[in-house]
Amino acid sequence: MGKTKLRTDIIQKLKALSASEKKKIETKLTEHLTTSNVWRQADIIGITISHGFEWNTNPIIETAWRYGKKVCVPKCRPKERQLDFYIITSYDQLEVVYYNLQEPIPHKTEKLTKHKIDLLIVPGLLFDRKGYRIGFGGGYYDRFLTDFRNTKLSLAATMQIIEEIPADPYDIPVDDIITEKGFLRQVAF
Image (cartoon, rainbow, N blue to C red; front, side):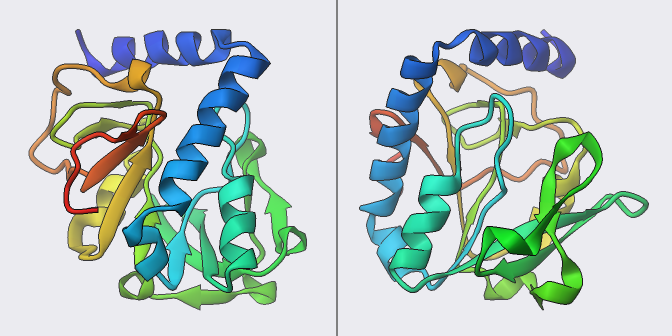
């Protein structure tokens, strides 16, 4: 099955979750992440602002702020298909852009080089046990991860884990995936 069909199928399944099922999974994902050693050791967390059927990242962001961690979120540069990350200290530093995404307002935030991000939460739709992922199809994170050397994790329900992702040579796996049951690969976290 191709990536497009896999992507379409999982989006339908995620959208079909009831609000209570979704909330239950999100609570577990947040709990497993924010009680982990990798979380405790990270000072700067890179994460997207979720929307729609995606797992809600606001509780993670707010937990980071409560514990004095810095949170940086991506801004897309569509012409180059690149991401830049900016530190936000408030949701007021975000603006709604294309596809109803929320992104940082550059003049109200501080831009970071990628190597300053200790822990990057990489979005995705489907994953395999090796850490390969199918994202939303833009390739932004694939390009960003090419020389990113710090910890890369993803959040996914067990229904988003499949046997094998049809990986391309340029694909870079995440270090581990957090499911509602805990860390999938148990890679020293």
